[in-house]
Length: 437
View 1 (cartoon, rainbow, N blue to C red):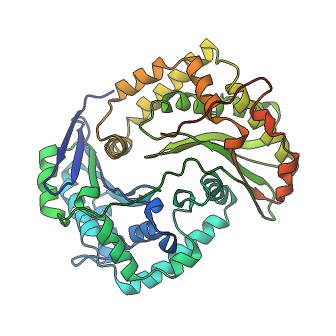
View 2 (cartoon, one colour):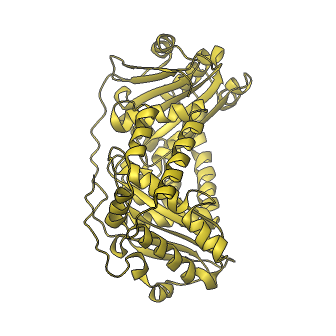
View 3 (tube, rainbow, N blue to C red):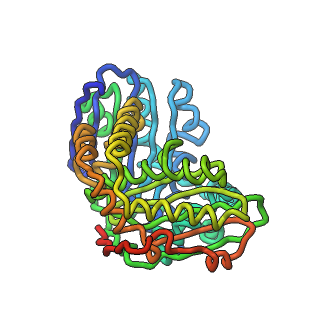
């Protein structure tokens, strides 16, 4: 791991700045993170965070959309953005000598967008097509159905892009009001990694970022934990069934995330994983199968995705449930535990080769923890996990009553009557209550 130096400053207006200086790097990854995402939107304006993310690229008092698109590309840089359930991020990657240009552009689009009405009209159509594209892509549509199944009736389970109905009724006033409420200095984190000087970045931010000193309005959100997950089918005339199944877990700051990370890798983290070896290699039921996870401010989830022949859907689901159940009843062998720890720590170190990944890590730690956790500390936490810890967390979350299941394909919900749900909770094992963080 390369030597780095991390600094943090909270500016007078509340804006937080976190940098990681890497002297050997000649590029900088820079991100402007707004602490607002799709879960904070009222139902009637679902998709506003994502729509606003699109619109800031459409013009400022000094730049039009073409100017914004060209400004960093002409220097060999990259500009992009994304919206998640809890955050919106605008990010750039440039040579270290072009940091002033990157700060100037990001400051302009994030703090001074004009949100032209004619562009709002055009972008409604663009985003509606994006929603249709996702809906027409079964391996993406099933993930939207999965989050709705995992957190039914809660905003965190809605599609980040919103719906055709809410997007079609979006107005410039809706976007401007939403931005005014949430895009305030105290809701922003600027993170940078690479060949960056903390002091230089602070001076550039003071010159280029303009946000009101007025604190943002409190956002009232209810925890999604406690709502029983659902099982849903979206019938489509396609050649495969696409399946997502999973369980709610814990928040980012919960220490149980470490054994869950290892369980994720053991079950579906690569070609050597249990699910890949069992469902694909031994039984030949799928081409792709993998496990995934996410941790947020007050909840998280663990899931599995695969696609298979419709006739093999029940078999593939039951094999997956059986592997989850085995995780909750049979301790991981010492050899498997050592191997998976090495794999996970190796992935962490390889990830640190990317300034973009480091920038993301800095921001997420600041937003969720209020501090930076050195990767060495994270690796020690991974090393402390025992086989018993993995069994304990598996027993807490892997049970039929906590299981969300979503399917997109040429079948109906009658399939649920043919699945042996007890595969996930083998006879003789005991379920433990899951305390939500």
